[in-house]
Image 1 (cartoon, helix red, strand yellow):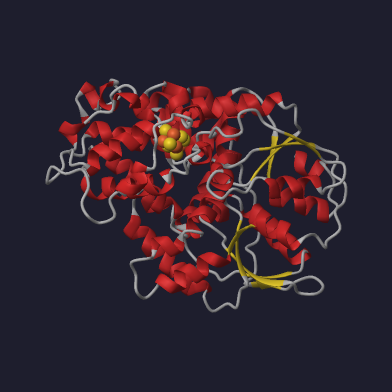
Image 2 (tube, rainbow, N blue to C red):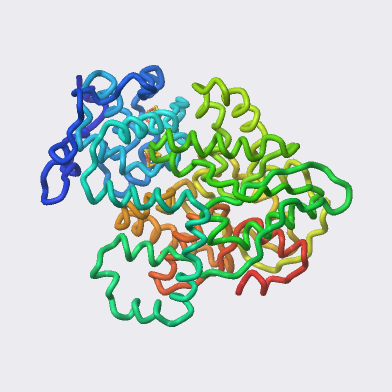
Length: 463
Ligand code: SF4
Ligand code: SF4
């Protein structure tokens, strides 16, 4: 039954068409006529928490872009409710769920505490199990998940990518307009590739400098480890300088964040179990993460593995030790001397740090602790930059729109340097700045702190 107070009927906005204008239901039928099966469907009690007030609407990037009720948090919860009440999983429904960035801006905005994060995660797992995607979409997703959660495979890309960037081929391809002719997905992938630097791999164990304050296990990550190894190196140096012994087992693999955020729960469970096995006996007091998307998933390992009798308790114990880098450093308090960095810095809240983990004050406090550094705020900080894991690859056109908005807001701060704590945001905003013909130096919070502690000067971050 449709509740009129929920706005326009979600399925009627003309947004639910597949290739050639055919309804996507035709391309992706479901087996038994029910949207959801009984294995963790979106919970009816959590759906019922939504009082339809609409406070979340202006905070939702897809609602801001398209103004359609079905592409708002409230509209998506409405669709989940339809599914729970026995409606079939239509292509239209799936399209609206797919368009959600998973940015959790609505969770921050909601005065009723609706657990949209849990709802969309359960919904996505159902969609991945029960919905047959059209061939192009399925192939693209398969390719993404055959590559991104595997650090070794990503590292194999470094050589060819560096050759492409350094040989002048990249400039030639850009001038030829070839990528635009091949489609927005390839254009997006190419524009996201960061400039790669050679950095030695961190050792397995790095001693604390001075008196040891904690033993810290460290996630090297997939994209972070392969494309931003300099961020990991900076992280290790700061932790050691702040009195942490850092443990970095090799071959630690993916944490499963990308998989769990995209409904691939079984795959995520495998990654999570392996990571727990790898770190469980290292004697760590904390498990530190410098990528926002990974940190938010790791903190939920207890819920993710709640059905697993072997890992349930271990997963909860592991999750209790997880800290974002800024969260840990702020809690420990500084012991290493900070040297001046005369820079104006704009700090961008990665969604999975700000909205999903509520970590906003700590990175700002750390940056403000650096002498001569001036901090500027970016307008509309709650709105996602459009990166959202692999959302920008699956939805290149709206992602570019969101990226361009964010880049304009960043430029308006007049800052010398953009600082954020997520590799996806760094790539997305850099690509948007490049499209606008603008340049701005970019750094992870770890790199700024590292430059200050090592007294490298502002030039080290501007280059
Ligand atoms: S997670 Fe983000 S994109 Fe999805 S409904 Fe909430 S605010 Fe909108
Ligand atoms: S703000 Fe919360 S309660 Fe209000 S419509 Fe959005 S999700 Fe529902």
